[in-house]
Length: 329
Image (tube, rainbow, N blue to C red):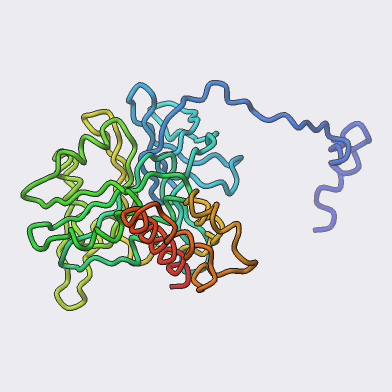
């Protein structure tokens, strides 16, 4: 076998050899494709790597993230640049800078972006079945305040219980709130979110999908019941998805959550979301926990012009302290 092909080898000379340039001699450039022809579109859902967008003319585009974007995440609500035609899977080649992003920490300690570029965070809680949970609402408020998103509290199942007493603890924060049920939808909520981008979050079983269906029946989101044994609802949404409102806005439905991690948020960021209280704590002792007798917040809440203002200040301090405490849960 050693002689096979020997004649061919003997006939080769230097002119037959194709010399490949080494890496050091290859011409290199820092220029990258400009993708000037990319179509601007907004992401309405991301499912197992497939990105569905709506362009500015209302056409739906299915795409995959281009390799050059690397590890950069794409979330519902992102404005992106897309290249490709409607007959094949397009590519997302650009992600525009976000004005905000709703994020939460997951069990492995990493951050997960839920949605981007939203106007309202609609925190959905049931008045009963299951009972409302202050801890979840507080943590959702932290996520909203640190990203400059306007929070809204919606209490569902108002036909089962009165939520007025529960909502009193949030009065000092001046958060818009609504009570609704499947028999009596709240038209004021629909008016508030008209023309805006609103993301709805809540525990499974609180009636989030039912609420979204009342806002626009054509959505037809699947609804689930609460387990009588565990008191928890069944997941009916597997990934975030945006729906166009007839009023011109967008509603983003998210999967029901069991927890809302905040390990990516610090105390300084939370206090900064309360400008009046942030100014007060600048006079606190270094490393003040803001829950001590010597904390300047205690003096401030009792220094109002009248009893009504003192009550307002006391409520704001109580809310801040409860939200700070939620970081340790």
